Length: 174
Image (tube, rainbow, N blue to C red; front, side, top):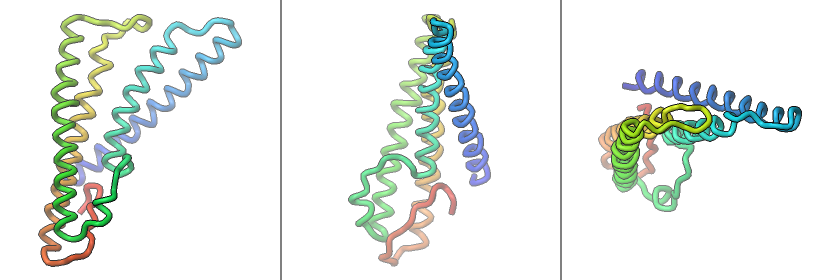
């Protein structure tokens, strides 16, 4: 499972990097055409918006995996031993529940609805279902990573049953 997680991590990080490069080129092109030619390209603003959606959602899955996300750690930094493990289990279970209900199920519903209604973007004429497909995709990734965190917390709990020291929950590696 760790080998699979590392492969997904690499693919995800490179995907976000490539999307960022495309976004930078797109915005530079938009500014250049606006000031040099007097008229911005018609598709650049819409492409930038769609790229930001994908970068934001895929980047949030990657940030969650690497523990780089915004966190309120008042309680987790003070908890030790088994209490910390239980707190981490609770936190990652809530994140998994959110990812499942909002991103996977809600996102899948949105993708299905926009597909059935055949909604397309104004400038690029791209089906909006393709744009919104990042919702269930990032939800599945976050759910996968939450399962890894929960597994690590449970393995650490078994290793530190009577220890009252703080337990470090890794980013998917035991």
